[in-house]
Image (tube, rainbow, N blue to C red; front, side, top):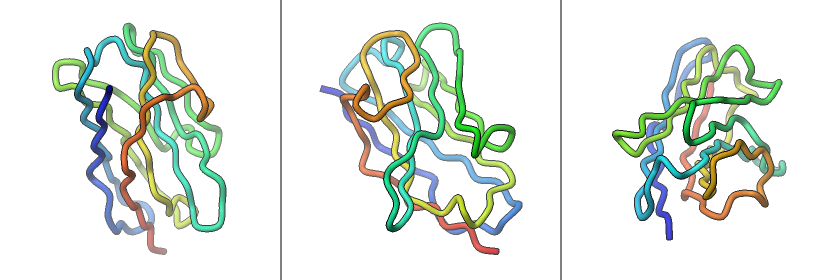
Length: 124
């Protein structure tokens, strides 16, 4: 069983920066592929970014490409989402997800473990 705890959410002004963190426990972190998703009010949860477990290959949704960056620190069992130049449309609950195995996943059903979510609100 893998436990995921997100932190770093809050209220931020458009154009500022914010970094979300997700600490994993219960399994060797370096064996987990990690991802970030978000869900805005009234909308379905959507993929944001993912990173594989061994060489740091990443992929990002077009909606955040060039603004958000996923990265991980295996020594700290932590995956991050660096959010630069956020927009009001980025307001959502952000979820961290984990999957056993090395390759990148971009679909919800590919992830077996989820955090409780952290609220990010971007004001204009």
